[in-house]
Image (cartoon, rainbow, N blue to C red; front, side, top):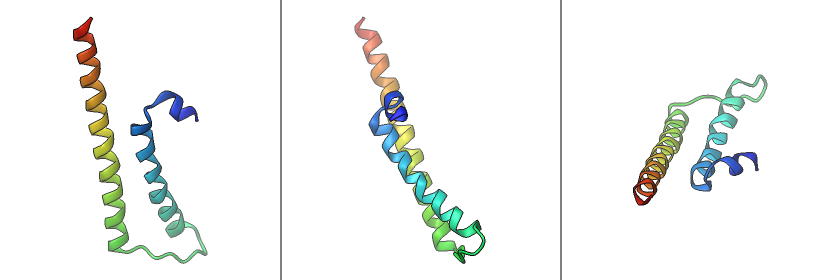
Length: 74
């Protein structure tokens, strides 16, 4: 709730996808779980991270553009 009070939902919600990366890394490095790293899984991590970065970059530009547009109205 704290994050949602400070960020737009369209920016904060994609960040939930980062939990998939954290869970996978935890499963690989936690002793006893036996999850083996693979190139395909690493590729999936790259796609998730790239998607989150793309959405964050795009939303940041939209916020900046809308703020500049609002400043021009004043």
